[in-house]
Amino acid sequence: MRIGWRGCKRMIKQVYADALNNLVMLANTPGWKEYAWGKARQLDSEPFGIYRGIKQDLVKIMLAQKANSGKNSSDSE
Image: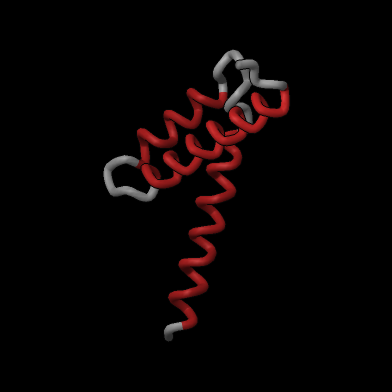
């Protein structure tokens, strides 16, 4: 069975999304933050380019979570 280019592209996007979700989970887990950021840097420089931009995407998500948690804590005051 052959997978066309669209199928490959979807699979690559799913692999990227899964890796990013795992990094977010690890970065939010006490004791794993440093590992998650190191892994993001490593994946971002991976030679095939599948994970190019993952470090920046992790930064965006973590900053958004931080902003939302700050907003939620000020709402409860």
